[in-house]
Image (cartoon, rainbow, N blue to C red; front, side, top):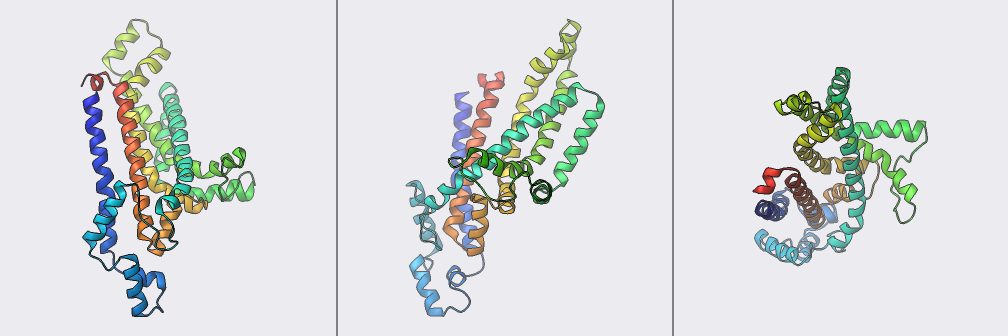
Length: 313
């Protein structure tokens, strides 16, 4: 168990280096001049060259990368080209917003998805067909379209929830929850359907196994088969799918944050990309990679706990 987790943790640390490195060099080969974009089309060649020198953009790419890598290992992700503020300070204030959205979506699509999957397993085939239909809809409906629809219904027509904006939990807990309801639903909908279908399919496989048939023949109740055996045996694949959906939700959060005007990492990524603020974009890549690494490690730990074979390895 310890050996397996150690190897996965080592692979995760390698990922933490590889992803920002790829991001850095992709930025370096992107057409266009950063200084020209910052100063505007009316800037003179002399002013562009001066800003290039001030930002260090006239140095070789490999030298800039080594400088960034040295700062990265010391917890320094550089300075924003636009504001001059530390990237860490800029992003740390937005991290809580993104985590509130993403973790909220994780809780919603996990609980609701598992419950729907159990319901469709234990009920008639109608529920199973309904889950299939809803799963298809969850995959087909873009979260930005669903977000606009939710705003139109619950914010504009019914006036039940705010359409945009974010309230800090330290200011008003009720307002914080209200500001997250619609964004969380928009981000979690596809995950709900995916988890529900995976839960149902895995539990049906477990209930159809010879082991389950033997327990049923020995007088085990359907509730015991459903919760003590089928759900437990299906938990490994379900948790893996939850982790994959969570990672996919990171990209979806960029769109959702911009629709609902949430001041998180996603909205900052769009703004910084438009401004060609490369250090901030690089920092966002690091933050998202850390989130992915943490989620993967947690999934491995949970799977190891639930899987006796993994504990023995």
